[in-house]
Image 1: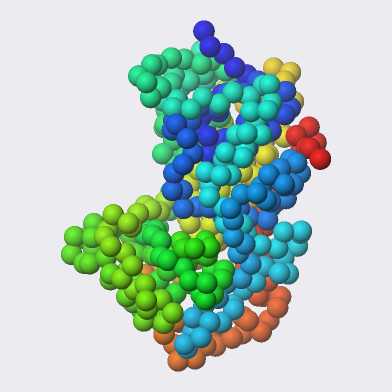
Image 2: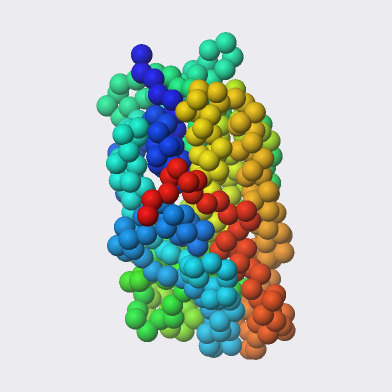
Length: 410
């Protein structure tokens, strides 16, 4: 019978950081990842300043610096025919005054390499946790299914579900959740980027198209907002160029790429969800990351919030796992620690959905095609205190977590 102290389902950011930290504490930990590698187009590739600080504390600064990356430190909006900077990260607290755009597979590979150096760590790829094992009503492990067709069971003192917003373990546990309606979905695609293009993040806000362009060096990673559930009808009836031509009307330097998309297969759909478990745990099981709270893409904070969950869980649970005394009360402590940041971020996202995104996808915003800068935006730009609040909240969040002493390296 296979056994480990802590079984982590899912090798995403939350699962890998939790596995690394627990292993550095000496906790025997096994991570199950259903894919054979991390080479997938995650699209959510933002690494925020709090995560950069965490990597410094873990002794991974030099290795992270070797990864291909771009630094996002400003937001510019095309208004009245010219680019105008509306936000900057240069005044936020901390050492890192930028958001790093790094392929998520490179970040996960980095964490996996660091964890593999720990004798207590084991990563099993091509292996998916599909159900929970229970002993006298308490979760005591998982059933798994491997890509080669083999199946089995792994028993554990604690199971941590990090298997995303469609978590099989969360479903198996029957944990109840709150869900909020979202007014939009997102199309993700790439456009070529020229050296003469502006850098950073560029929102495009017109009556016909709402998008944000993220500088990835030789290409733009573009997120376009669409009305919830409208994707199938648009794909069936409209040419793919209908996405980019309205953008080029507002951003003239995109004119030479207005028809860069060759087909709808280049456009990926994100079904936007926003939910949160009422209780993140049951006896023997803890959910963190998207398995506990599916986030909207607003602010690009999902990855970093998941990582922060993993750090808090490791700090609270490592001593209990080492002594074999982890209880449901300890799992509740993790939720209490992470509730305020989660509620704050989701509250901000719900407000953004109602006040900005809903009117935007309804065609009621036309900032990029405006003849002059809107009054509200002029006021925002001229008041430093107000102007610094959104970048700080997005870049640093609420209650940032730091690496526990047992996991730090010079």
